[in-house]
Every structure is written in C-alpha cells, then in structure tokens.
Image 1 (cartoon, rainbow, N blue to C red):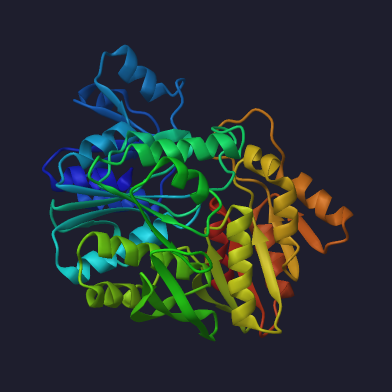
Image 2 (cartoon, one colour; image 1 turned 45 degrees about the horizontal axis):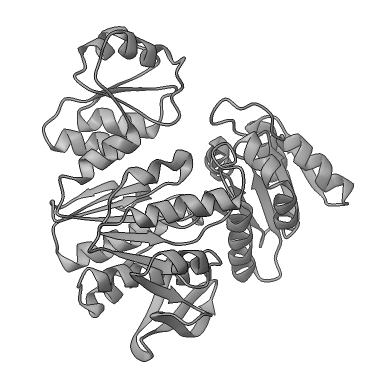
Length: 433
C-alpha cells in the first residue's frame, strides 16, 4: 500500500491515508508529502475522490463505513494495483508461496543495471526502498495469493516460484491453492509467458494445462538449470547456469542461503524473457545484497550475531535455520519465533513442530494477530506441544521479558535468529542496544 501511495504522489496526486499505529513507513510517507495519520478521520475520507482499501480492512472499519455510506468511489488494493499496471507497456508479476519479495528485489537490481525504463513495486525494503521508479516501460510487482488478489493482474510475464499450503483463511487445502495459481497462469496475456520452477510439485499440474512455459530447476529437466553448485562458506553459494544444455554464465551470490539459488534462477529467467543481455542480468544478480528483514544481520550482543528473518511459514523457517547452521558451524542457534495468525498455526501445526526442532534453543512469543480470526491455535499451544516432545523452549507474552532472558543466555559464538512477520522484528532493536 505504501509503495502504491508513493507512486500516486510521483504522478502528481494528493494522497492521504490512515494506519492503526505510527511506524517508519508512516513517517516515510509523510516525508514524501502524503497526509498520513493514525486512527480515523471522517473529514479526510469525505474529501477523497477515491478510497483504496487493503485486505486487512474489514467491513466494520469506521473509515470504510464512512466512505461507503458517504457514496465515495471505492476500490480494493488488488484492483487498484491492476489499474496502476495498465499504465505500463509490459507487466512482470512474481507469485509464489515463498521468495516473491527477494525475486522482485533481485530483478529490480537487474533492470536498474540494464538502464531500461521500469518501475518496481516491492513488498519489502530494498536498498532503494519498496518503490523504484524509472519510467513506464516495465512494471514489476509481487502477485500475492492471499484472498486470491493476484487474479486481478494480467501480466505479460507471470512467475510461479513455488506452491505450498498457506493462508488457511482463504484456502481450505493445497488443491484450492493449486487451482488458484492455475487461474493466475491463465490470466497471463495471450502472447505472454509463464516462468516456473520445474522442481516444484505443482509444475506437473501447470504443465498439463498451460503450454507456454519457460522452466528453471536444480534437480529436474528444465530450460535453465543451476549446476556445479559450490558453497563458498558462511552460506554463500556460487553456481553455473546452463541454458538448453549449454553453459551460459557463472553466478556468485551476495545473499546467503541455498534457497536463493532458486530465486536467482527465477530472476535470470525473467531477464532472458525481457531480452536483457545475460552479462547485465548476471551483474544485477551478483550485486544484489538482499531485502531488509530477510536473513538480515542487525548487530551483535556479547559476541553473538543477531539476525532477523521474515520467515513465518515452516518451509521458510527450515531454510532460515539451514542457512544459520552454515554460518555458525558448531555454535548454538538460539531462535526467537512469533507465529503469524492463529489459523496458519493450526493448519501447519505439525510442520511448525518439525521445523522448530532444528534449533538448539527456542523462545516463543505470543502470536501476532494480523486480522480477526475465529478458531486456530495459539503460540502457547505450540509451546506446550514442543515441551511435551522434550524440546527445550520458553514462552513469553511480552517482548521485553523475552529479550531480557535471551540477553542473559547469550554467549560468544551464538547466532540469534529472530523469525516472524509480526512485531517480533522489534526485538532485534532491543537486543542490539
């Protein structure tokens, strides 16, 4: 939402908006010239020509009701994003359960190196922020499956990175999610192309229904493959890209984690489909240093390195812990985790237990409730189940209590991993002060 607001400001519109709390994003928008406030303001809503609302806004929201009852023109974020995208010559939409923000950030770096006129709408903070505006030839955006919002887009290049069970408040099971991604693929323009991961199980479903596919993989047969993979140490990987059976170029990543090989392959595939010289694509990928909050080192305390990662799905947690183990070696991994939504915790309860057992010590924070939910399982229930299995872990209702105990536990050589998409990220600031 904040990146879209910035784009509207750049195009000469007056922008106002509200949030439930004051944050760095709110402060940033004010600096950009937006009239942003915390809470409700009837006058500002009634002065608006258009009201854009996100999926987090429910029908009983006071400002939503003001706009509705006041006869204001209203549009949801996903349809507004589609309207924005029609202003560009070509649209590239990155979808998938994991990796969307990283691939968007990486591809944005490639486009910047190529000097094409593009705009990148990123779901996280890169070194250039969450909006990069260079022109209207190409619009790069994340295509999120939550609430099926990505189905509004009509991209020229659509990317499906992976498909797993998530968002149980939108989807009942993996079959529903798979069908939704198929619908996303069918929304690609007639002369467009779908790029997808051939190592993903969902690829076989997509392959049978969508023909214009460019594939990448590590293990499976694909148009683009990573071979001769080397771990240079501390979780940084290098590999050779082979295209249609012929060596193309060598890549050495500046972002940690084996999973980022897949992200680089997706990015390289997009670069090729956009007609960018492979050397420019390589340069962009190799110069990409990551997205804020994605396995990001935020400081040190008592000789322990502290990392923050947005991971809130079991698969993401496993990838983060695997990367942490490569960095710390025989040292301890101390994990701080906050479940994100009660329904996700319930739907993936067993997977969370398996994933979290990979750490040496675990601290659980009370769940972050991003929206109203009926049912689900709490962080305390996850804690209880792990304790019953004999795992050493602790539970806390507040950040300060958790941070205080972690500080007293730290030893030189430890790696602290703060995981979650909620306000647990703030603990990094507490631990490093």
